[in-house]
Every structure is written in structure tokens, then in C-alpha cells.
Image 1 (cartoon, rainbow, N blue to C red):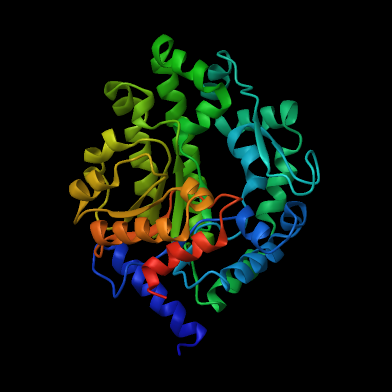
Image 2: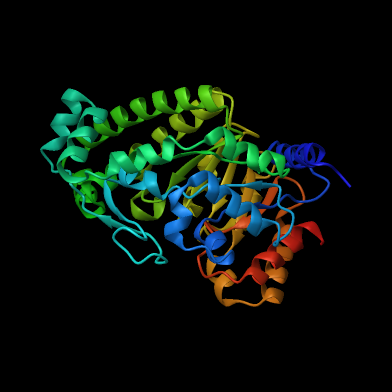
Amino acid sequence: MENSQQLFGTHFNRLTTAISLGTPDRVPVILAADSFFARHMGVSLADYLEDLEVSSQTNLKSLAQLGEIDGIQYLVPCVHALGAATFAKVKLPGRELPPDAQWQIDEISPMSAEDYDVILDKGFTYYQQLVFEKYLPLAVPDLQKYISSDWQKIVTNYVNAGIVPFSPLIFGVPFDVLSSARGMANLTKDLYRIPDKVEAVIDIITTEMIAVIKGQIEQIKPFAVFTGATRCAPEYMSAKMWERFSLPFLKRQVEAVIDSGSYALLHWDNNWTRAIEYLQEFPKGKCILSSDSNTDLYKAKQVLRGHMCIMGDVPAAMLALGTPDEVYQYSSKLITDLGPDGFILAVGCCTPLNAKPENVKAMIAAATGK
């Protein structure tokens, strides 16, 4: 029986072997979940969000009943950071919502076409503060609650349980940030009407974001940095536009993460199948492509074998609506077909609130054999 330090070392080495495209002793398993843990432990979501260090303890109590995982994506619920990150009103249980209701994001798309000039003149951080003061008075205090939590204790809780805190730093990507501010329909029109101005603003956002990322990595030294993208998926624009407005800025951000000493977790929702060939341009053995079940992971493995680790891809709906046998068979097939080299078993995006615990156990068991 391994003690917690030995167990952590085993999990750490298993993950680094997979990411560096080697063949570990078994395929590692990562769990991404938040509200599921609270529901599993009978904790109201309002209470779950009250103290994030306590919420990490709730997560660990749930995990103790689910099986052995190698790492965890969300150390605590990140909902308090979403208002500032997405220029949206965040509705929380116990505040705007009933105590056990799932939190919600209410997009307001506050940016006007004239605001491009403000950003070009004053910078994006300056513009963010204007928006927060005028439209989103709760975004900053919510964010402060998130960043002022006892992160050292939170990380220690997982390490002492032998679990790798896989991606404690979470960032969006420049195009998605602008899309949240401007609104998806408005930004799509802007790509045609004022493409040069849009590109210049995305460049500013990228430069400012990279500075923050580098500072955070230097301070926290995370195993991996969660780089979340969805609205800049190639299914939403032509190949020519994607190559101009999405790809170069994604590469800059990912390369900054890797140059700063962390792995890059490409948590890319929606369909990225058209972009798989381009991922050969990203640093070898330093990235993890994480799909939400929309991207063709079989094609990704075919193209990226020997270049990039693949992670996924058990559908959230299956965890909520399927049976343990269905989950086990699906997970086992992924392990057989996409492993054992350069593959990590995980949920497609995030474990839903209403996932059946026995289904989550079945997914984990497919990797551990326990």
C-alpha cells in the first residue's frame, strides 16, 4: 500500500509519461467536476460556494467514494471568476437563485462597435474596468472571493490525498473574450465589416493576457494551465478567417504557457476536427487536447500520435442518462483504441450536476481496473 506521497508520485509520473507521449503503466484518468461533488455529498450549492477551501474538502470526500483518479481539473468551482472572464452577470445559488439551483451565466454583451477604438487607445484592461463599473458591479468582488481563497491549503488538500492538481490556473482565449464582450452575432459581422480593427484588438487582448498568464505561472507554478476555447472553434468561421483571427493568437498563448514551464491543457469545446492538422504546429509533447465529445478524437489520434496527448471524451449525457455498463464499455473502448500511449481518460468537458455516481465510478474503473 502506497502512502500519500508515493501515490502522488505514481500519479504525477503516470500523467507526465502520457503527456510526453510515452506509455504509462496504465492509462491515467482525470476528473473534471464541481457541482456534481456537492450533489453527491448532499451539500447545497449555496453552501458549496461559500468557502472554496471547504469545497475542496467536499470534492475529496466525494472522490473517496468514486475510485482512484490521477488528477483533478477543477480544484474548486470557478464560477466566481466567470463574470469577469465573460462580461456576464453570474447568477449564484443562495443569491439570485434558490440555494440548490445550478449557477447560471446571463450574457449582456456590453461592448459597442465604438468601443474598439477605446481598446486600441487605452488597452483592454482599461476597458474591462469601465465595463465592470458600469454594467457588472458584482464581477470584481466575485473574482476577489475566488482569487483570495486559501489556494495553498486547497492544493495541499489534493496533494495529501495523492491527487495531482492538474490545472489550477484557468484562462479563456483572446477571440472568446472578445466574443463574450461584443456578442457572438455582432463579432461575426465585425469580422467582415472591420476585420483589421478586430485583429488589432485581439492582438492587444493576447498581449495583455499573456503578461497575466506568465505572472500567474511564475507565482503558482501549476502543473498545467487550462486554456479554454469554444467560440473560436473552426466550425464557426471559414478556414481563411480561422487562420487569421483564431490560430495565431491561440499559438501565442499556448507557447507562452509552455515557455513559462507548464503544460497547456487545450480544453476546447465544440468541433475542432478541421483544426487537427494545424495542431502539429504546436509544441510537441507539451499539450493535451481535451474534447467535449464533439471533436473526432479518432482522427486526432491518427494525426497527432507521437506529437500531442489526447484527453477525453466520455459524454456528459452518458454519465447522466446511461448505465454503468454503457459507461464502462465506452471508456474501455477509448482506452483500447486511443491508448495506451499519449492518452488520458476523462469526461467530455465536465461532469454534470445530475451525473449518476455509479456511472462516474464505472468510468474510473475502466482505467484503473478496480
